Every structure is written in structure tokens, then in C-alpha cells.
Length: 391
Image 1 (tube, helix red, strand yellow):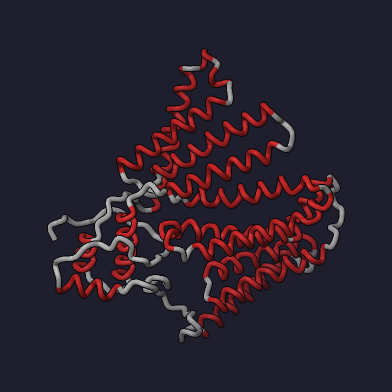
Image 2: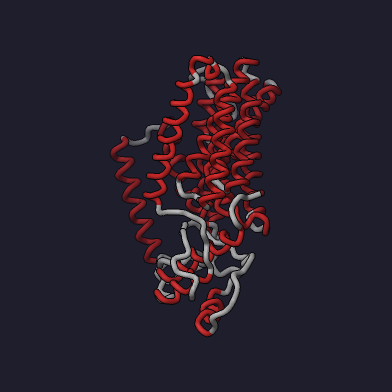
């Protein structure tokens, strides 16, 4: 399903690990050069600044080219029909396929921009069509379902992070619009259903990341985990539920029924994330929990003004500094898998013995690249082989 060469993807992940080991002082410059020469990958990627530049440039090129074509065809009135953005989306997709296949781009910025514009044209054209056929609220269900189909396909085909996030959001949007049609029961249970779906997304993405077929989608699954944890909290956050309830029922300022349940979720869920993240050494859950503590404080501050904002910020900052200092002092000696010292990524040596590869390269000039190393690596990007094939 994935468009990229799988052997090159394997080698690219190995190169990322070799660079991490080099930065940590485990590999010399010459060893790094030799290893990258052997585990060669033609997939093209760049640093973050280059990616952003190419991304913006590609968006400008797509905008100018589609605008020029639209002006040329303006007299035919084709552009006044919902079929026009659908045609542009299909054409954009074929360009995307050919560009990635011919130039081996993998998260270079160019392919990311083409993926976004393809999805934008297709979803926009479908939304225009549904608005023409049926302008009732029910067409939002069809649009969210179509968005889910497009984003899932592009995620599987190109392992794109943004499309993975869009898949999660479009699924929740579909549940949101469809569940409302159950009437009063649907409106009353909607927050809990969204929380249940978000929890299910997190659970299955956590399980799926261990599956061999998901090896090339580990970054996408990490995005799903982060986003599902956020939506799980937001679905039960008092402020979000209260404001959305008032908006849907057109009752501004009305108290939220059983509001204490959502206050409990608002305050305790971030703390639960932090506690479980520490217990299971899950950095994603730990960091999301720390982020959502700010959301809980903001929600409480919105409804209860205990102290002036300047005093509250000063006290909060002082407390955070004291806690940070205490944690740093405590973790000078690593405890329970946590430390303040900079470490290599924790999942690097789960299944792959890097030392054996280095020793083999030191004493042998032969060997083949592994077709499926079975190791799962974290974030980062690298491109190109770096050396000639004469090693």
C-alpha cells in the first residue's frame, strides 16, 4: 500500500539511529560514513527549514497554476460547478504519485504540500456537491465520512502525519454529527461517546504500533496517540462541554446538568495522565498530561476568580520553578527509568543489536542490508546515502 520503497525506508530508519549514536559519541565519523554507505537510501528528505521553504513554494506553485487554468477555462463556466475542484484534486493526486515515484520524496515538504492540496480540492469539491444536493445539517455526516475515507487513504499511501491527524478528527466529527440524531439521549451522552471513541483510538493505535505491518507508520500512530489523548480530555472538559451545550441548545449562560462530573474529569484526568505516564514510562501520556494541566487551570480560572491574574501567575511560576528544581535534583541519579541526563531514544535497542552491526562492519567488507530489521525508531529525518558505493 505504501508508495515508498520498503528497503529504503528500513535503511533510512537505520541511518537515523546511526546518526543518534554518532551524536552520542558511540560512533566515529568514519564508522558513520561507512554504515550510511552500506545502508543506502535514495529517499529524499531535508531539514525543517528546507521543508518549510519547499512546502510554501509548492503551495504557491499549485495556487498559481490552478488559478491560471481556471482563468483560461472561465468562459466555459466549468469552474462554476462542483466538479471543477474534484477534477483539480484528481489531477493533483496524479502529479503527487508521479513526483514521489520519480523523485523519491519522503516528507520533503513538496510531497506534504501536494498531499494537502489534493485532500483540500477533493474534500472541498465533495462539500460543494453535498451543499448543492442537500443543504440540511445531515450533509455534514457525509462530508466527515468522505473526509475520513480520503485522509485514511492518503495516510496509508504516503504515511503522512497531517492526514493521520485529519483521519482522527474526521472520525470524531462523523460521530459528533451522527450521534445528535438520537435526540435528547444523543445530546446528553455525546461527550461520553466522544471520550469513549477517543479512548478507543488511543488503545488501538497503541496496540497497532507493535504490529509488523505498522512498522512504516510509527510516526503516524504516535500522532494518533497524542491527538486521541487531547480529544479525550477536551470531550470531558467542563468549559468545552458547557460552551458547546449552550451553543447547540441556544441557551447562553445556562448551567450544565451534572456539571460536577465534568469538573472531576477536567481536574483529575490530566493528573491521571501524568501518574500513568510515570508508572508506565510513557512519555507521550506524560507530556500531554503536563500540557493539559494548563488547560485545567485555565478552565478553573474562567469560572472562579480566586486571585488576581498577576498574583496567580506569580504563585504558579514560583511553584513550577520549585517543583522543577526538586525534580532535577532528585533525578540526578536515574530512578525508575527517568533521569535528567540527555539520552538516546529509548526504543532504539529494543530489538536491534547496533553493536553487532558496528563490529561486523569493522571486520568485514561484505554483507547485505536487512529487509526488515524489526526495530521501531522514533522521530527525526535524514536523506541520501552520503557516500559512494565503492566501500
